[in-house]
Image 1 (cartoon, rainbow, N blue to C red):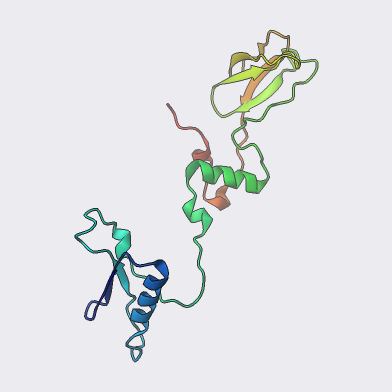
Image 2 (cartoon, rainbow, N blue to C red; image 1 turned 90 degrees about the horizontal axis):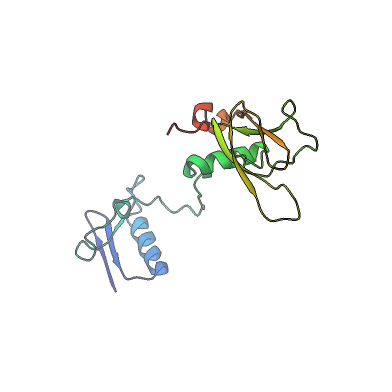
Length: 180
């Protein structure tokens, strides 16, 4: 086990120490020289010879230990689709990507079809024509055109209504799919 404390640079080089011993050495090093009001935090680094691809995060300064546990704000960590999904669920929408099954109306017609929301111009959908059979009938729907399934039900693709998620930092342009 190797532990060195450089006096001038206040840098602790720690290698193969258990976590408890490492934290003890860092706390002792940061608490030494107690006459100064404002001290620089102790930096922790690995020996340069052992890891040629050392991360710059290993050179980050450690805050003084005040006994508080700090966790990052989850909204700063979560990105893209996961952030959108959590924001929609927080607003009360359990199906943010419109993937849940839609209940068919009994007597659908070209004038009164089953409406499926989508933010794209076309969508692939499956119809369970008979509830006793595990076979699905797949078909492509195009926006504005009602289409009839083999079982006689009609389906139509409609424009998806976007929810205001501006308080989560998500604009309506971010909710729309990227053009392919």
